[in-house]
Amino acid sequence: MIRDKEFFNAITVDSPNGRKPDFTLLPAGGGKHGQRAFSFVLQEDAFHSLVNDTSLPLATRCRIRQCSQEQAGAFQNIIPYTSDLELANSDILPQWWHHYGLPQRALVGGACCRDECKTHSAATFKNWNEEEREEFESGVHSLTCGAGSDGAKGPNSNPRKKRHNDANVGVVGRVYTMAGWAFSAEEAKLHYTDPAGEGRRVDGLASNNYDANAGMDEAVDTSFVCPLARTYVTAAAAHDADYCTRLREKEKRAHHGSLVGVTYVTAAFTTFGGWGREFMNKRVKPYWKAALKEEKAQGGTGWNTQRDKRLFFQRSAVVIARANAHMIKSATAAATRIGRMGA
Image 1: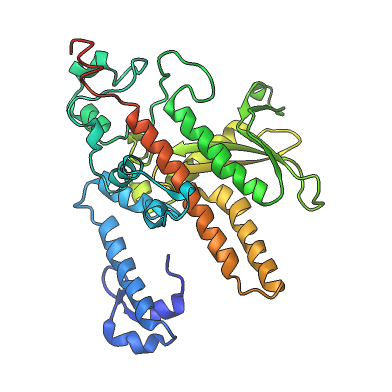
Image 2: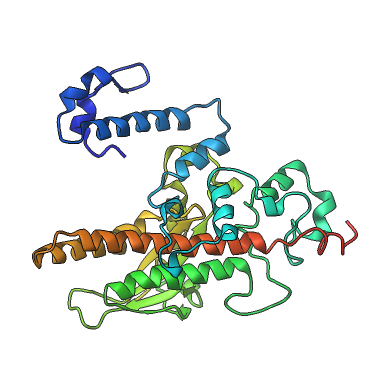
């Protein structure tokens, strides 16, 4: 996260726990924004001290580290001056509580998951142990559960599918269409060199027939990870902000790696709103870099591109926050579910 290593080295000193900022060295840093840069170094020092403090619960350290991933927490900086940037309290608060490790108020005191859920439905409510109750009241279960909804079928038949599809179209698809590609969110059945792959499907197929440098069509698989799920609460996740999405990218590449005739990319996100490196580095950053270069070539300052880039990430954060909130809301109150089951 340190952007200017020369400045960092100029204003820090060696210590048993690594280099530490020294305020007396601030003038040695030079530059127009020395105070701002020094504040950044102080924040970095405090952050690393926190995530490396083994006296803290591992889940807390993992949450803090994963919330530092690129674009995680972007929902907090949204200025809702257009309707597509508006977040109602019922949408922003679940995301806020999740981000800061607080209980989901709607899930405390007797809510439960859908009837199809095998672990947290009304039928199992009486048997929850403390860990299962905490997992539910924190929202971790609701943000990962893929149980159906009252037997419904279709692309949005359960809240997890809805979040997936909203992000696939409203975030991933938008990246391709901005860049002039055609994007189809229909589940595409493709061919694999590995016979075992036949029948597998990806979440979208992008093509660009108007750009000679675009290369082959691109298959994309969109996926979400909850860093607070038990699988991901590890020392590695407390050390690396990209650990969870990188693991998902690896899993997906192993699943789809033998595709024939197309390139493949995983668009991985976390429930905190963080973006995985694979899609970010392959499609998102190159697009904005090219847009900035083009604007400046036409005599612009680059401000319009920076504005559009910020708005793009804010709108993406809204899509994820709304979808997460929908998943939390899907767990209904005790009076209507648990009472019905006689719990």
